Image (cartoon, rainbow, N blue to C red; front, side, top):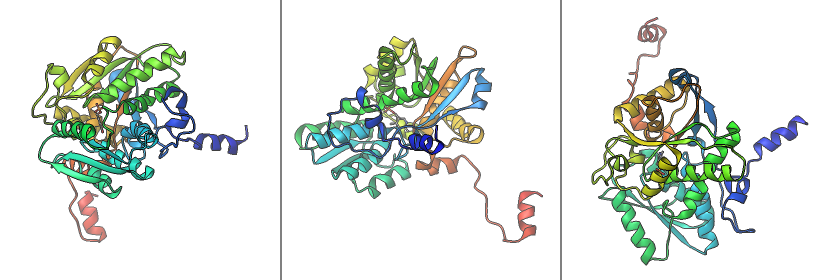
Length: 355
Ligand SMILES: *Cc1c(COP(=O)(O)O)cnc(C)c1O
């Protein structure tokens, strides 16, 4: 094949709705709101593979247009909001949903309102929501309270809710599973994923099942959901009133898709379990240092979960790294020793380097 043609084909990704439209509830001829999301790297992880005696892959969702997997659901949610004639969207967010909603709403020409828990959102995410032009309200309350208010706004005002209680979000997000199968040739043995509001584990499980039904894959993975110990309602079996974890993206005490997460676990023979903040931060540093992937703390929960779970020798493992580390530089800086400035001369620099 002509090389130029091959490259054109590879670079001609049109976004999830066009690429996976036959699996999505899209209306023919509808205006598609896309930023070219999806087709994220599935990176082989040699260091983790060696530790676990398995074939470990990392799906780096931080490579999406706004830096998290939330773009997969948002392209469809906003496309449907436009189709329905909506003029404004609203969401509660631990940060990434608001960044994504703000970007796709701006693309569509819709107003965007976001409610965030004051003081508990990574700086990069807040910056994104603001620069894309969303109307941001910081509330004195946590994510769970913000979501309650958003539900009330959706019921009483002419706005479309784009949290994952909007069914199009989960529909769009299931394409992550399609890509894993398209890239590996079949479903993996294990799928590790952070669990906050539990929309994403629900979505991946649906995606794997739809590909099996369509005859594109031949098997299903065990779904391994990982919560932060301070925000582990599904593990505990009851809501957590004051969830707390360094992984702010999964700092959620009463997940909207609780039953979806339990369904994924039970039907797949998987597990939902908790990891400590220390385990999360240790995985976070390991990923950057040994696998060259800078993800956010919540994302590292999936790898923290893998590190403490025995897997069958030689099995294939996918860990979803849900968001980009650049969103939360404060946590990164807190994990390293920041070098002090030295004089700009060779001797001072040599001394500082111990050369
Ligand atoms: C939203 C989010 C999660 C949690 O996903 P849920 O669908 O809420 O379970 C995990 N990591 C990151 C980076 C997120 O933005």
